[in-house]
Length: 410
Image 1 (cartoon, rainbow, N blue to C red):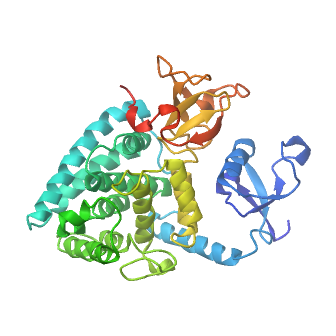
Image 2: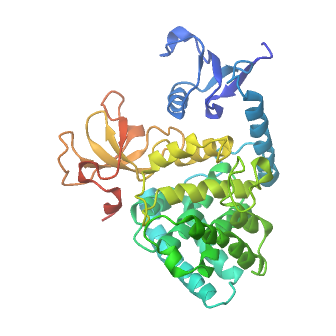
């Protein structure tokens, strides 16, 4: 075989790759062209559904900047292998409960985490220091739930944002961190550090004026300069916690740094930003734009992933963005979707292999009339050709449906 051609699993396909051969003759495959570029994650999902492996032409893979992209990907793989002790990240953890079963536990864990974070913030405002054991207890309970099944916490994150943004942002960022780390195959001790750092992103805001934090509308340039100080305040708080590790400090210090150097407080760029810091920026941005704020309305999870994808290799590292999208799925939990049949539902659980075939709670029938009973269907188990495929993602509020008002099990 030519040195330019390489056999890979379809699980390893990425946008920009050029597919030159399939695992069976072209005439037997439902593909329009004999050789094509992979352009989207939706296309990747379709290829994964049809083929086990393909052959890519490494000389034709996204010519502009391809060498840089390959070098970044190799460097990321090396960083993750150093942490994980293994080169393959996929399928390290398996779901051991259903989303319905895990939700019962996740609700209680979320409640206790909210109470604990409120207590921690009050402690800091009173001028006291935090105890690492208290923080780790919160993260450990959350981590164990997500390791069993991450969809339960994903459901809670996107459908029940009724508390203070500061508290929910801390908890949601922690849950996103553990979920992403689970996808990357990080060991438990690294998941604990990743989740702890994410939980403490904004502890420095306890040192800022309340009026600044609760101001309705955007901050003035002078106010924004004051707001940016929360990063330095946070680093100071974290370094005073006995037993805190450098990974935690990196996350708090770097969660507003950007891959192209446009972030703050240091303007660090590229791989000079520590790995957990690069991850922190993605998590912080995603949760912020999917949350209602005094000056902006939340966008849907699907829209948020498009924003991140559009910011790859500028604000965020492309390879990490691609992994984050694979982690949450093309249709993240909490997305309002319309099927080919015209029915409307909410994504409540992911299919870890076939990302275009999640589990959906049906809300409206094909005439857009509310169903009396919210039936749950698993698209992966439905007979092909029944029009039970996702046609498009709808903005929250379409047909009067706000996903936050629907709660699994109620």
